[in-house]
Image (cartoon, rainbow over all chains, first blue to last red; front, side):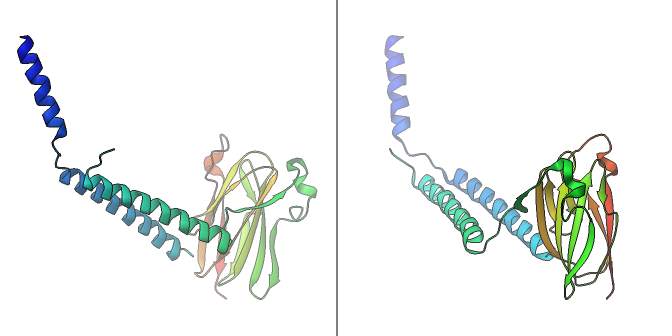
Length: 51
Length: 157
């Protein structure tokens, strides 16, 4: 039991050192950025139209 | 601290956006003089009726197709309530409140301001298109808030 616990911990450490792929997260962040930028331009367009 | 390469990229995008936003706001405020629609003038809200120019609310011609529109707001009406403006007129809107916080929005235009008692707020708008413009109060001001509105008629020159 005790040995298994130790090996689990070692595996956890190895997994933490591994670089995760964050490509999906990055893409989601970019999609959110695109949404924000488009809404800003939308509001700006509305402002210009109503001048 | 270790950061993933993509984390660095989106942190840079975030910081860049913030810097861009502050630069635009800074230039707009300090170089171009944009500010909220408060002209920093104060008055006694209990003496609105005897204080210039609110003792005579209404439209006054001040130049070539340039007007000053003085509005007094109180629960639950805007004074005056029958405003006629010629097409293409540049109108300086000056407003104050006699009682509580009101809002002044001319629907479909960029005119939208908070009207606070004791303060004078102003905005300038040019009415390019003739037609009927609705003015509404957009700050909840009491039980009759939904009835607080008036109209501006922009007539063909």
